[in-house]
Image (cartoon, rainbow, N blue to C red; front, side, top):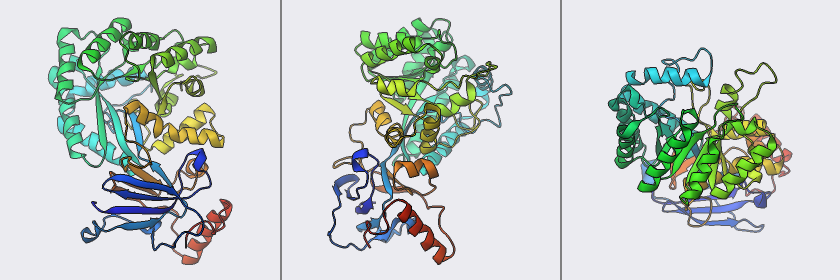
Length: 460
């Protein structure tokens, strides 16, 4: 799409915007203006977004299109900052009888050499497009880098991911991080990691808490990252063991190299098992060092506490304490239908809802924070400077069939209209479309009335 878009009667999710409606204009892939609507403004001929479906006619692509959102919410494009796209949908081939993290790692490691580049590429494309349909416009994927199964096995995953990124150009942005294996790589292994970065990957990942020498592994990762000038995103302390504190070493190295804002620690399950005072000290160090955090509630609720007879620890990190401690904290999907997590679908609004359950977030202010955890906070982690629904921002957005954060998490609405750089990439029309016109009007009127709108705040 090269023309312009305009949306009237749009809601935004920030607390300061509650009860207000906005007129939003997009030109050449960027937000041209975002203005609050006031009473008495001119009437506008606009199409109801609920009736819009793809594909658009080609001869209309250069025209200005005006859509009436009727109070529906526009969110900036969701950012899923921690996924495993290359492993997704591998559960039928790689089982996990015990449901433990250890068996998942062992089983996938044994199966890795059997997956062709085409299979891995197809998984990445399928899962990325599914995430797009739910509103994500940027994804960060950690890639299996199984050097022990052979150099060709590790590199084929890199090649598959780069090919998938090229295929998805203009639809979704992919960030790709090879996972430094926790076994001793040796010099050649680190050379292969460096080679993958030179091929086009974006940063370095890993899971040093699984290593017999985590401090040495962390030091090696930082040395390579600093030399190449790339960010770091590590799986940290994904265990119920309160003695596991590799995030402390990560924070220390971040301070040593002045890597503030370039380091991310995912999972942090052990924080929830240790005494509050110890957790508070670690969180303070993370904040001081500028180490970001990601909670993965779906996978950790499934994986953690397997050895507990009661009470069962659930593994989700200390969400509120990290937020209150000044750490940028995002929520993300992690694994989807693989031996690590048999469920999931790449829907960040569902993930945010799970975070709300796990972290006891339920107030109106909390719900805004949950939406921030899948939009603003991961955008900070990704270092996006042109993000958000504001003048000059990149027009990556999702319109949801809900009028406020509470309705988002009550309904997890099916209706999602997704655009990348101002171009429609996915439309899933609302499920609440009734065959009988009278019932449809009854539904719409009841929604407006229960939201206190009463049909008077939207343009006719």
